[in-house]
Amino acid sequence: MAGEFRFTFGPWNIHEGADPFGPKVRESIEFGKKLKLYKELGFDGVQFHDDDAVPDMNKLSNEQIVKAAKAVKAKLDEHGLIAEFVAPRLWEDPRTIDGGYTNNDPACRQYAIDRSLRAVDIANALGAKLMVLWLAREGTYIREAKDSKVAVDRIVEAINAILVHDPDIKIAIEPKPNEPMDQTYIPTTGHALALGMLTSDPSRIGVNIESAHVILAGLDPSDEMGFALAHNKLWSVHLNDQNGLKFDEDKSFGSVDLRRAFNQVRILDKYDYGKDGHWVGLDVKTMRTQKEDAATKHLRNSREIFLKLLDLSRRLNHSKVNELIKARDYEELDLLIMKHILA
Ligand code: XLS
Ligand code: MG
Image (tube, rainbow, N blue to C red):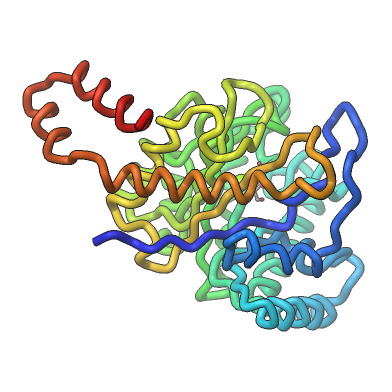
């Protein structure tokens, strides 16, 4: 059965173009204006960092946070949009300089846990059933700075606190091997799922697989997706592309390697990803050179390429593929796939 796909992105995917070497090149677009763009671009879902929904949340009481998040929910309803997930932003506060859950300072660790619980409250107010954990600074610049065994224990402890805080929330860990850290503790899908097994409720821990992060780990995104699908743990995807091993580029989906993108779409469709309500997220950033009025084309393009590849994948001559697999003629299969993509 051919599945239906619904698309999401986060407000951070329409951004000002600043990088570590230069200031912003486009004016900030306020959140309300961004919301208007979603449907125009063909998207029905919104992904949030906690403070995308409630800016300056550290200055607010718990009640004020929930009230502000409910106002955002009303705006989403107005636009016919759905909140997919909320991710606690655990990398910008001074208390997270050396990590959140794995910080060596107990007060900083407590801050990270408290902030995550507030993010769960925001998810509830927005009607999102999922929390994404991108463990940005849970790692080290030098190995001696933290104890890797203790670090894992501490991440588990923090996740358990979230699971207790809300008995219904599910958590999708978004693995990434590096950047901003030299090395992180949860670099791959396998690490994320194994970590889940250590928590008090493994049934509520899954993954959000981002193509670029997988490529940075030297792995293939479609294979990582297959691994997660085999565990029934693929709860979100962040599709994008990446030109080799460098900083996280978040390039438009398929813009570097169409065949790699084709295989991601193919496995998602083959196993009917989306049948349980999971979304296709496009975690893409436009190029710094892009002018103000053309700075959403990366989202339009990524979705369009996904749909084109979906069509291509469904039109692949599957019996021919099976025949070639049976004959172990992978050179012919290679050519078949290349010609199919070229066509
Ligand atoms: C950064 C991550 C981030 C997460 C959400 O590399 O991709 O955007 O998806 O916290
Ligand atoms: Mg991402």
